[in-house]
Image (tube, rainbow, N blue to C red; front, side):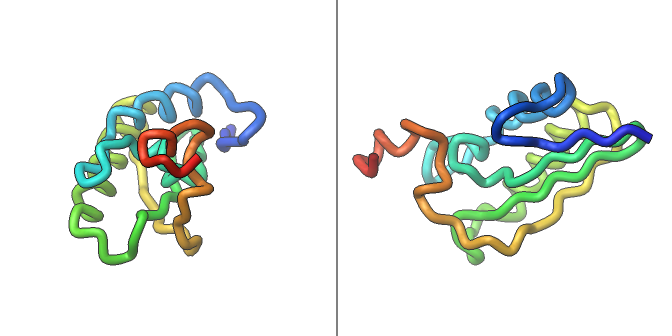
Length: 108
């Protein structure tokens, strides 16, 4: 059983495809996608299942359940295997955003 995981320096084509597809999943309050916000912490793809570890910008995000489900369905459709989304324990901060993504907020 092969296993592919996200890495900040390199990734496999399958992981890259899922990560690219997740750029379509938007946080409706912030108007930015989950990848550029840094909410996707890890993507693991096996031959029969994939697992995504993600966080939310705030634990009480009113759109959290919808964002999580959108991440799951988008990843599942892209990877063609059942996908589980697990919640990470990290606390989100603006420094987790992709380089240059905070420019719209005047943060960086």
